[in-house]
Length: 285
Ligand code: AMP
View (cartoon, rainbow, N blue to C red):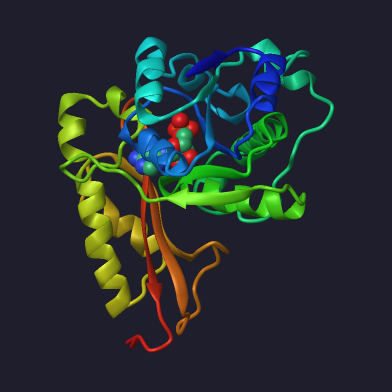
């Protein structure tokens, strides 16, 4: 595995590759969720580029940014073992020579961000879209891999790639969970022991709420109240949306549904979701 710290180093290393390129952008503190993306990316004869970059533009909270977990030595070992061929580790100056706020052009996301996380994290998806667009321009991958745990992010990226005619195929990968059901996240290390015990209830609740919804659809407000009965953390939202449109579903909607939530614990804000598809022949009561 080559470790590359500048855009120029990465580009010249990729220029020497004859094979197509698969790309996995991350913020590091790698866990099995990230590695599942790499394993899917590495399943063909391709160069697998992973980036690790903690992007200040997408954080609403300075403390969250400054305290973002950093496990670089372990990340390098795990990335190589999982099949990464090129690990891109740019520093802040490499990606933002004039500083993040010194950029002249930002991507501003206009659809699908007034709901779910977007409603609670102003500017977050602009920051995500801006850095992902930068990375796509630098890496020029044939495929880019994103986790479905961040379902709204995946939808935003799909829309951006389509709007800007970026020649990349976006592949989304299923959420990887701990054995007790908690979705893996770099932020889980910030849970206190009693919060860690409580957090798997999120996934249990989502499964129960999905069944309730299929019997009797509930509003975003009721969803929030319902989830709050299952968990001790503070529920920010818990609602059903269409995917990838993120609209409130019409009564007889057929297609993919997303039940997504965010729960705030003392030092960690966790998100999770489940998706399912209603087919034409499914009975909806
Ligand atoms: P992050 O480092 O949190 O920005 O995540 C990098 C990529 O890994 C994103 O595409 C995430 O959606 C994905 N990811 C994070 N956690 C998981 C998980 N538990 N299962 C699958 N993908 C994940």
